[in-house]
Image 1 (cartoon, rainbow, N blue to C red):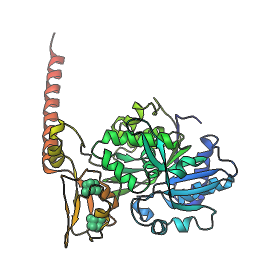
Image 2 (cartoon, rainbow, N blue to C red; image 1 turned 30 degrees about the vertical axis):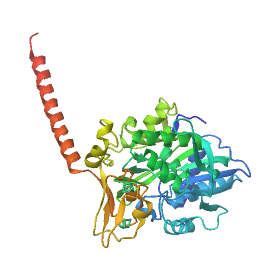
Image 3 (spheres, rainbow, N blue to C red; image 1 turned 120 degrees about the vertical axis):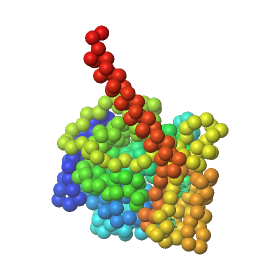
Image 4 (cartoon, protein in one colour; image 1 turned 60 degrees about the horizontal axis):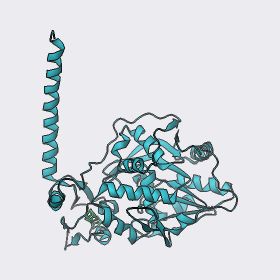
Length: 391
Ligand code: SF4
Ligand code: SF4
């Protein structure tokens, strides 16, 4: 398979159009080695129980089309993930998966156990789902979504779900305040899992303050497929007119030699010029001794909309830093403990949490924008003056 090749295909979620679109895409990518009896892991984005129209999870019809494709080749598909919250049964029911996959000979379950895999420095051995490491082939099925910490969650990021349960939380703790380190971790997990194919569900994607309920669904009508997840992620950046260098996982993939220098794109797509990216606060910058101060006052923080909060407890149960305390009618954040991983915003089933800019950070951003405008104006004046000069 050509690792530089990425294919776009316009379609919708209707079975009649989606099924040929998915099988056509997978066939065009080249031979997938999934002969009779092969164990194929299909790894969707199963973030949390959510209806498909929230665009938080891979659409059930895309999953169905891929499962059918695998079954038609005589292979044995397993659909598994490690959802951030809710039971797997509830996720299958609310997400429409139980209904969409009814009657198909496919196993659906959470990852059960992990094995230690050396993913290289600086992380060494980490626990990755056995099913991901022992499958004959892995098909990676991310959703095209924004992510308040990593900007976009696409092919590379989707494989973080192969870290099972609480181990995910521990890795957030270890690298959650360092976006670059977290991006490296994601890329090294991608390298270890090594999916045969990445197929992004961008038919109904998400923009704004994703990846949870604070994001805004956006219809794009596209599937994007390739053998290399970093190449697919680069192609999605082109679609969204976002410089790939701004994507932390892309920068880490370049460093590790896993991002192609260039990609060859086939299939038509209309670049989306007005895609709304999340506001990303820097996670670490400045002198180390000032880090706690900077983190407390300048880095965007989770905030709750009190009228939406139902005190369900998902956020404080899942907060890796135990930075959320429930009171009688409201929750309280300890911003000294909070590592700005935004898991709580991801998890909140009622869309009550979002990552927001702090007042001082907003003021600094506005001041620096003003300064840039003034400098730009002075530059233009200077250059028009020199144009008219006889010298
Ligand atoms: S903020 Fe969201 S997750 Fe936390 S208690 Fe309120 S409704 Fe539940
Ligand atoms: S409060 Fe939210 S953002 Fe902060 S550490 Fe906990 S889950 Fe992460």
